[in-house]
Image 1 (spheres, rainbow, N blue to C red):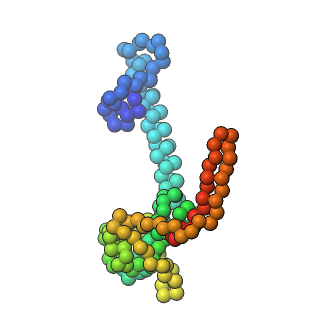
Image 2 (cartoon, rainbow, N blue to C red; image 1 turned 90 degrees about the horizontal axis):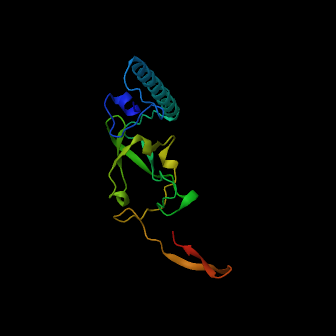
Image 3 (cartoon, rainbow, N blue to C red; image 1 turned 135 degrees about the horizontal axis):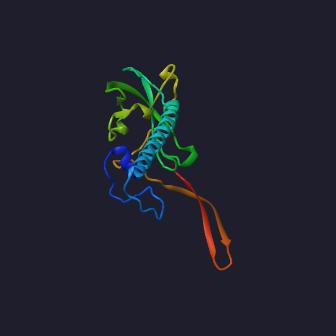
Length: 183
């Protein structure tokens, strides 16, 4: 019996057997008891993995309650290597802006009052994308103006060439150029 069959009570499309090679006995009470034991083992293992995953996610879950008229930062770099808002890699911004919450939508969604530069972005965000501002929001220095086009990207413009280098390998030469970019 496949794990799919044991869990959902119906056959899986792929033929998977729990029998050893050369085993031909397909009838009898012994086969039924073996199948029932396998189902019990499968269910126990599913239960243990589910409890492991639940305990792992419960430790990292944060219950964040934000009220209307509170100030929050917006998470803009959920993935490593994404270029957003002018910097790449380690120096890229994690959170931008200082936005006011207009209204709460459901239990985990909030509508923000975005700046005119961010007018192309939908104003409703999940609570995991927000970070509450503690303290006085007037003391926080605002970031520079974000120039984002309709595709939510920006154009990099080279300013000057800082250095040139030619690396010689056995049978070819590779030219490297260090460029200072505007962003």
